[in-house]
Image (cartoon, rainbow, N blue to C red):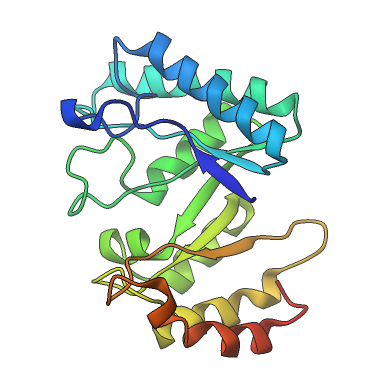
Length: 208
């Protein structure tokens, strides 16, 4: 188990994460505690702290940063990493964290060794493009990579698989980046769309 998300909150009330939402700090911290406790029990490496929908103002930013400090302190006790993931504003309007530059600034400012970026290729491609250059620029901040085709978020296409091949040269035992697939199967059945996986496994055996 590589990682898990903090609870989104009540989706019927328009919540999609809690940690940047002013006025919900108690709920956000309970969600962080729950994720860290559960992750520690199952040996997960990472907890993705979901920011949520906000007005993008200074109060939301301060709330997010305060909750990230809290999360990093808790996770450090279990040798776990806290991940933050920009979600593109086309799919998630008003999500507090939508671009990698914003995430990089938070990581730099908070200066916590266990705070890293989740580099989701789908979201980065939709929001910013230039996957190769963005990855190269951000490599030292990245704690996990997710792949899926863009713009439909289905099974990884050749461009995504080639991207994974290209980043193998950045891997090391000291600072590895795990790669996972997060997508919506074209047919609705995962089993129908796994033809991309065996070839990638053979190509990357021993590299990731």
